Image (cartoon, rainbow, N blue to C red):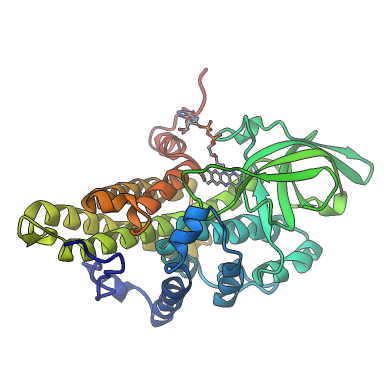
Length: 399
Ligand SMILES: Cc1cc2nc3c(=O)[nH]c(=O)nc-3n(C[C@H](O)[C@H](O)[C@H](O)COP(=O)(O)OP(=O)(O)OC[C@H]3O[C@@H](n4cnc5c(N)ncnc54)[C@H](O)[C@@H]3O)c2cc1C
């Protein structure tokens, strides 16, 4: 017997083995339920279609704005003003739908809006943030280059000052949303070191070209950007960003969201395989009745419960202390993405041949998580952050 693709677990708390719900406030649970309901009704029914067509569904932007999750943990300037835990919960529920759609919210809120909120002038914040929180202005964040990924300090893009004007030349790669964005935060090397600029995407010399034939994150957009004599005024420079700490402070926000998001993808995969294995009969019994199956389900659920606990601990600490140390974020990102990808792959295998179709979510999630383990610091980069923390010896570069 082949279960229908719609087979679902009926108890939404079935994977909560340790009463995680008791650790959230009623408002946090209500937020979770609101975002979960949106994902259930507006994303899940169509995600396979968008993923196969490699289409980012722009209609979700308004839905996300209405949910109040764009720039969710930023305050003032028309931003929702939620907590870090609120933001994390929303990311977990969104990524249970699809990592590509969670990535939209990360790029818009944690990267582009956060860059302006952290480093911008009052005028810049008032000009851009209210429209960005409403989803009326889309932003992107250009740090990575064709030859500078894990080592952004080796960037080749330059900004040269000529009077009150900056002239930017270079190239960026893998820039989320760039082809639909109204503004790009562009990080460039100047005579004084790395600086950030708000570049309207209709500025002459700015071109964004979507990267095609992706096997991961198909329902989202990443682009190559070319910058040829792009001119912006000094008033478009982010005045409070000096050096690489400028972009890194924004990346830390996005990395924190991933700690939660990865657990959403893992939970959705576990729920899919729980439903499937309860109905799928082989050798006369449901797959769920076999001990080998139960061990896999139990291992997945244990890791998800541990991963959510870790995310929640980091979130509460972030809210209490106003931030997290880099090694704390690395611990969460490295662990939760590593565990999530294993869970999604195992869930795919447990679906047998049916698991390689878009009728079921685990392989889509696993493929998306290939990107998630690469962006916002690869597994290796986060391992090196932790190695440095433990030994005191930076091992990022030789010699
Ligand atoms: C879907 C997607 C969305 C993205 N969105 C954005 C975005 O919006 N904005 C943006 O600026 N960037 C974005 N990126 C880029 C992303 O941040 C980079 O891909 C990432 O930093 C890795 O850089 P790279 O791809 O150049 O790989 P490389 O840095 O070339 O790394 C290749 C491999 O070498 C390993 N490696 C590197 N250095 C070391 C070392 N010292 N020791 C051991 N191993 C090492 C890496 O871990 C990796 O396994 C996105 C990427 C993807 C895939």
